[in-house]
Length: 322
Image (tube, rainbow, N blue to C red; front, side, top):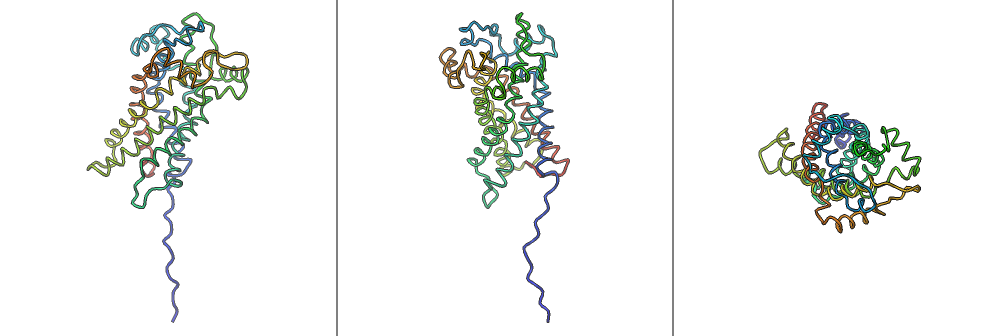
Protein backbone atom coordinates (compact mmCIF):
# COMPACT_ATOMS: atom_id res chain seq x y z
CA UNK A 1 0.00 0.00 0.00
CA UNK A 2 1.41 3.35 -1.05
CA UNK A 3 1.23 6.10 1.53
CA UNK A 4 0.96 9.64 0.25
CA UNK A 5 3.21 12.16 1.94
CA UNK A 6 1.59 14.33 4.59
CA UNK A 7 0.22 17.57 3.24
CA UNK A 8 2.57 20.48 3.57
CA UNK A 9 1.67 24.00 4.66
CA UNK A 10 -0.82 25.80 2.43
CA UNK A 11 0.79 27.72 -0.40
CA UNK A 12 1.15 31.43 0.30
CA UNK A 13 -1.41 33.55 -1.49
CA UNK A 14 0.34 35.38 -4.32
CA UNK A 15 0.68 39.10 -3.70
CA UNK A 16 -1.49 41.19 -6.00
CA UNK A 17 0.50 43.42 -8.34
CA UNK A 18 -1.43 46.47 -7.06
CA UNK A 19 -0.05 45.83 -3.57
CA UNK A 20 3.54 45.78 -4.84
CA UNK A 21 6.12 48.35 -3.80
CA UNK A 22 6.25 50.25 -7.08
CA UNK A 23 2.51 50.25 -7.71
CA UNK A 24 1.88 51.60 -4.22
CA UNK A 25 4.61 54.19 -4.76
CA UNK A 26 3.14 55.39 -8.07
CA UNK A 27 -0.43 55.51 -6.71
CA UNK A 28 0.81 57.56 -3.75
CA UNK A 29 2.50 60.08 -6.06
CA UNK A 30 -0.57 60.39 -8.31
CA UNK A 31 -2.94 60.88 -5.36
CA UNK A 32 -0.60 63.44 -3.76
CA UNK A 33 -0.25 65.37 -7.03
CA UNK A 34 -4.04 65.64 -7.37
CA UNK A 35 -4.33 66.90 -3.80
CA UNK A 36 -1.42 69.32 -4.23
CA UNK A 37 -2.79 71.02 -7.35
CA UNK A 38 -6.24 71.49 -5.81
CA UNK A 39 -5.03 72.94 -2.50
CA UNK A 40 -1.77 74.66 -3.46
CA UNK A 41 -3.03 78.29 -3.16
CA UNK A 42 -3.56 77.68 0.55
CA UNK A 43 0.03 76.46 0.89
CA UNK A 44 1.33 79.61 -0.79
CA UNK A 45 -0.85 81.78 1.47
CA UNK A 46 0.39 79.89 4.52
CA UNK A 47 4.02 80.45 3.53
CA UNK A 48 3.49 84.19 3.04
CA UNK A 49 1.71 84.44 6.41
CA UNK A 50 4.56 82.73 8.23
CA UNK A 51 7.01 85.31 6.86
CA UNK A 52 4.84 88.39 7.50
CA UNK A 53 5.61 90.19 10.74
CA UNK A 54 8.88 88.31 11.23
CA UNK A 55 10.45 90.59 13.86
CA UNK A 56 13.83 88.84 14.00
CA UNK A 57 14.26 89.41 10.28
CA UNK A 58 13.14 93.05 10.62
CA UNK A 59 15.90 93.61 13.17
CA UNK A 60 18.35 92.74 10.38
CA UNK A 61 16.74 95.23 8.03
CA UNK A 62 14.85 92.52 6.11
CA UNK A 63 11.26 93.60 5.51
CA UNK A 64 8.56 91.10 4.63
CA UNK A 65 5.62 93.50 4.42
CA UNK A 66 2.73 94.13 6.81
CA UNK A 67 0.72 91.36 8.42
CA UNK A 68 -2.62 91.10 6.61
CA UNK A 69 -4.25 87.83 7.66
CA UNK A 70 -5.18 84.78 5.61
CA UNK A 71 -8.00 86.10 3.43
CA UNK A 72 -6.39 89.49 2.75
CA UNK A 73 -3.10 87.79 1.95
CA UNK A 74 -4.71 85.43 -0.54
CA UNK A 75 -6.79 88.19 -2.15
CA UNK A 76 -3.74 90.47 -2.16
CA UNK A 77 -1.67 87.90 -4.04
CA UNK A 78 -4.40 87.48 -6.66
CA UNK A 79 -4.95 91.23 -7.02
CA UNK A 80 -1.37 92.50 -6.83
CA UNK A 81 0.47 89.66 -8.53
CA UNK A 82 -2.17 87.84 -10.58
CA UNK A 83 -4.43 84.87 -9.90
CA UNK A 84 -2.00 82.39 -11.43
CA UNK A 85 0.60 83.50 -8.89
CA UNK A 86 -1.39 81.51 -6.33
CA UNK A 87 0.16 78.46 -8.01
CA UNK A 88 3.71 79.86 -8.02
CA UNK A 89 6.06 77.04 -7.05
CA UNK A 90 3.67 74.22 -8.01
CA UNK A 91 6.32 72.55 -10.19
CA UNK A 92 8.86 71.91 -7.40
CA UNK A 93 5.90 71.01 -5.15
CA UNK A 94 5.01 68.20 -7.55
CA UNK A 95 8.68 67.19 -7.76
CA UNK A 96 8.66 67.01 -3.97
CA UNK A 97 5.73 64.60 -3.91
CA UNK A 98 7.38 62.34 -6.46
CA UNK A 99 9.93 61.71 -3.72
CA UNK A 100 8.15 62.50 -0.47
CA UNK A 101 4.68 60.97 -0.83
CA UNK A 102 5.90 57.81 -2.48
CA UNK A 103 8.52 57.15 0.17
CA UNK A 104 6.32 57.98 3.16
CA UNK A 105 3.50 55.64 2.17
CA UNK A 106 5.57 52.62 1.14
CA UNK A 107 7.86 53.05 4.16
CA UNK A 108 4.92 53.20 6.56
CA UNK A 109 3.27 50.14 5.02
CA UNK A 110 6.47 48.12 5.08
CA UNK A 111 7.22 49.10 8.68
CA UNK A 112 3.65 48.32 9.70
CA UNK A 113 3.29 45.02 7.87
CA UNK A 114 6.82 43.58 7.76
CA UNK A 115 8.83 45.13 10.61
CA UNK A 116 6.67 46.22 13.55
CA UNK A 117 4.00 43.63 12.81
CA UNK A 118 0.39 43.51 13.94
CA UNK A 119 -0.76 41.68 17.04
CA UNK A 120 -2.03 38.08 16.60
CA UNK A 121 -5.62 39.39 16.54
CA UNK A 122 -4.78 41.73 13.65
CA UNK A 123 -4.71 44.86 15.85
CA UNK A 124 -1.95 47.40 15.24
CA UNK A 125 -1.22 49.33 18.48
CA UNK A 126 -1.27 53.12 18.27
CA UNK A 127 2.23 53.39 19.76
CA UNK A 128 3.61 51.22 16.97
CA UNK A 129 1.65 53.21 14.40
CA UNK A 130 3.05 56.46 15.84
CA UNK A 131 6.65 55.23 15.61
CA UNK A 132 6.11 53.98 12.06
CA UNK A 133 4.41 57.22 11.00
CA UNK A 134 7.09 59.49 12.45
CA UNK A 135 9.90 57.35 11.01
CA UNK A 136 8.33 57.20 7.54
CA UNK A 137 7.77 60.97 7.52
CA UNK A 138 11.32 61.76 8.64
CA UNK A 139 12.93 59.49 6.03
CA UNK A 140 10.71 60.79 3.22
CA UNK A 141 11.23 64.45 4.09
CA UNK A 142 14.99 64.17 4.39
CA UNK A 143 15.11 62.73 0.89
CA UNK A 144 12.77 65.44 -0.47
CA UNK A 145 14.17 68.41 1.48
CA UNK A 146 15.98 70.03 -1.51
CA UNK A 147 12.72 70.25 -3.46
CA UNK A 148 11.01 71.86 -0.46
CA UNK A 149 13.77 74.47 -0.23
CA UNK A 150 13.37 75.33 -3.90
CA UNK A 151 9.59 75.54 -3.53
CA UNK A 152 9.76 77.98 -0.59
CA UNK A 153 12.20 80.26 -2.39
CA UNK A 154 10.05 80.38 -5.52
CA UNK A 155 6.90 81.03 -3.47
CA UNK A 156 8.43 84.22 -2.09
CA UNK A 157 9.59 85.63 -5.43
CA UNK A 158 6.28 87.28 -6.30
CA UNK A 159 6.36 89.24 -3.02
CA UNK A 160 9.98 90.30 -3.55
CA UNK A 161 9.23 91.65 -7.00
CA UNK A 162 6.16 93.47 -5.72
CA UNK A 163 8.35 95.18 -3.08
CA UNK A 164 10.73 96.28 -5.85
CA UNK A 165 13.48 93.87 -4.86
CA UNK A 166 15.71 92.10 -7.33
CA UNK A 167 14.52 88.54 -8.04
CA UNK A 168 16.69 85.86 -6.50
CA UNK A 169 15.49 82.97 -8.67
CA UNK A 170 13.52 82.68 -11.92
CA UNK A 171 12.59 79.00 -12.02
CA UNK A 172 13.07 75.70 -10.21
CA UNK A 173 16.15 74.93 -12.30
CA UNK A 174 17.62 78.38 -11.67
CA UNK A 175 16.95 78.08 -7.92
CA UNK A 176 18.78 74.74 -7.89
CA UNK A 177 21.76 76.26 -9.69
CA UNK A 178 21.88 79.25 -7.35
CA UNK A 179 21.76 77.12 -4.23
CA UNK A 180 24.51 74.85 -5.54
CA UNK A 181 26.66 77.82 -6.58
CA UNK A 182 26.36 79.53 -3.18
CA UNK A 183 26.74 76.58 -0.84
CA UNK A 184 27.28 73.37 -2.75
CA UNK A 185 25.38 70.13 -2.23
CA UNK A 186 25.13 70.71 1.51
CA UNK A 187 23.13 73.90 0.93
CA UNK A 188 20.34 71.87 -0.67
CA UNK A 189 19.53 70.58 2.81
CA UNK A 190 19.31 74.04 4.45
CA UNK A 191 16.44 73.87 6.91
CA UNK A 192 16.33 70.09 6.64
CA UNK A 193 16.40 69.57 10.42
CA UNK A 194 13.17 71.50 11.16
CA UNK A 195 11.82 70.11 7.91
CA UNK A 196 12.39 66.54 9.06
CA UNK A 197 11.05 67.36 12.52
CA UNK A 198 7.90 68.82 10.99
CA UNK A 199 7.43 65.87 8.66
CA UNK A 200 7.83 63.40 11.54
CA UNK A 201 5.16 65.24 13.53
CA UNK A 202 2.83 65.72 10.55
CA UNK A 203 3.04 62.08 9.53
CA UNK A 204 2.70 60.94 13.12
CA UNK A 205 -0.54 62.91 13.05
CA UNK A 206 -1.61 62.06 9.49
CA UNK A 207 -0.65 58.43 8.93
CA UNK A 208 -1.19 57.33 12.52
CA UNK A 209 -4.50 59.15 12.91
CA UNK A 210 -5.88 58.02 9.55
CA UNK A 211 -4.86 54.40 10.09
CA UNK A 212 -6.13 54.34 13.69
CA UNK A 213 -9.31 56.34 13.04
CA UNK A 214 -10.24 54.18 10.05
CA UNK A 215 -9.66 50.97 12.03
CA UNK A 216 -11.69 52.35 14.97
CA UNK A 217 -14.59 53.29 12.70
CA UNK A 218 -14.60 49.89 11.00
CA UNK A 219 -14.47 47.94 14.28
CA UNK A 220 -16.78 50.09 16.44
CA UNK A 221 -19.48 51.13 13.98
CA UNK A 222 -21.56 49.54 11.27
CA UNK A 223 -19.78 51.57 8.58
CA UNK A 224 -17.86 49.70 5.90
CA UNK A 225 -14.62 50.56 4.10
CA UNK A 226 -16.25 53.18 1.87
CA UNK A 227 -15.94 56.86 0.91
CA UNK A 228 -17.73 58.08 4.04
CA UNK A 229 -15.34 56.18 6.29
CA UNK A 230 -12.39 57.63 4.36
CA UNK A 231 -13.81 61.16 4.76
CA UNK A 232 -14.21 60.79 8.53
CA UNK A 233 -10.73 59.31 9.00
CA UNK A 234 -9.05 61.91 6.76
CA UNK A 235 -10.81 64.79 8.56
CA UNK A 236 -9.36 63.57 11.87
CA UNK A 237 -5.94 63.12 10.27
CA UNK A 238 -5.88 66.64 8.81
CA UNK A 239 -6.71 68.33 12.11
CA UNK A 240 -4.18 66.37 14.17
CA UNK A 241 -1.45 66.80 11.54
CA UNK A 242 -1.98 70.58 11.35
CA UNK A 243 -1.92 70.96 15.15
CA UNK A 244 1.27 68.97 15.55
CA UNK A 245 3.11 70.25 12.50
CA UNK A 246 2.49 74.02 12.36
CA UNK A 247 5.20 75.15 14.86
CA UNK A 248 7.89 73.15 13.06
CA UNK A 249 6.51 74.38 9.74
CA UNK A 250 6.92 78.02 10.82
CA UNK A 251 10.52 77.38 11.88
CA UNK A 252 11.25 75.50 8.65
CA UNK A 253 9.79 78.25 6.44
CA UNK A 254 11.70 81.04 8.20
CA UNK A 255 15.04 79.24 8.06
CA UNK A 256 14.60 78.40 4.39
CA UNK A 257 13.53 81.95 3.53
CA UNK A 258 16.33 83.78 5.38
CA UNK A 259 19.24 85.21 3.37
CA UNK A 260 22.68 83.63 3.76
CA UNK A 261 26.26 84.79 3.67
CA UNK A 262 28.91 83.65 1.21
CA UNK A 263 29.40 80.43 3.16
CA UNK A 264 25.72 79.59 3.17
CA UNK A 265 25.20 80.46 6.86
CA UNK A 266 21.94 82.12 7.84
CA UNK A 267 22.01 85.84 8.61
CA UNK A 268 18.96 85.81 10.89
CA UNK A 269 18.93 82.41 12.62
CA UNK A 270 21.83 80.15 13.54
CA UNK A 271 19.72 76.99 13.82
CA UNK A 272 16.17 75.71 14.17
CA UNK A 273 16.45 76.03 17.97
CA UNK A 274 17.63 79.65 17.61
CA UNK A 275 14.69 80.37 15.31
CA UNK A 276 12.29 78.73 17.76
CA UNK A 277 13.61 80.77 20.70
CA UNK A 278 13.66 84.09 18.80
CA UNK A 279 10.14 83.55 17.49
CA UNK A 280 8.79 82.91 20.99
CA UNK A 281 10.75 85.83 22.49
CA UNK A 282 9.67 88.30 19.83
CA UNK A 283 6.18 87.11 18.96
CA UNK A 284 5.07 84.84 21.79
CA UNK A 285 4.10 81.17 21.65
CA UNK A 286 1.28 81.92 19.24
CA UNK A 287 3.90 83.17 16.79
CA UNK A 288 4.63 79.49 16.20
CA UNK A 289 1.06 79.09 14.98
CA UNK A 290 1.14 81.80 12.34
CA UNK A 291 -0.54 80.36 9.30
CA UNK A 292 -2.33 77.67 11.36
CA UNK A 293 -5.72 78.44 9.82
CA UNK A 294 -4.55 78.05 6.20
CA UNK A 295 -2.44 75.05 7.27
CA UNK A 296 -5.52 73.40 8.73
CA UNK A 297 -7.83 74.57 5.97
CA UNK A 298 -5.33 73.19 3.46
CA UNK A 299 -4.54 69.96 5.29
CA UNK A 300 -8.20 69.06 5.69
CA UNK A 301 -9.02 69.09 1.94
CA UNK A 302 -5.50 67.88 1.08
CA UNK A 303 -5.83 64.90 3.38
CA UNK A 304 -9.37 64.28 2.15
CA UNK A 305 -8.38 64.49 -1.52
CA UNK A 306 -5.25 62.40 -1.05
CA UNK A 307 -6.84 59.57 0.91
CA UNK A 308 -9.97 59.41 -1.25
CA UNK A 309 -7.84 59.35 -4.42
CA UNK A 310 -5.37 56.88 -2.93
CA UNK A 311 -8.02 54.47 -1.69
CA UNK A 312 -10.10 54.78 -4.87
CA UNK A 313 -7.18 54.12 -7.22
CA UNK A 314 -6.05 51.16 -5.10
CA UNK A 315 -9.58 49.76 -5.11
CA UNK A 316 -9.83 50.20 -8.89
CA UNK A 317 -6.55 48.32 -9.37
CA UNK A 318 -7.68 45.55 -7.05
CA UNK A 319 -5.33 46.30 -4.16
CA UNK A 320 -6.26 45.91 -0.51
CA UNK A 321 -7.33 48.92 1.57
CA UNK A 322 -4.69 50.97 3.41
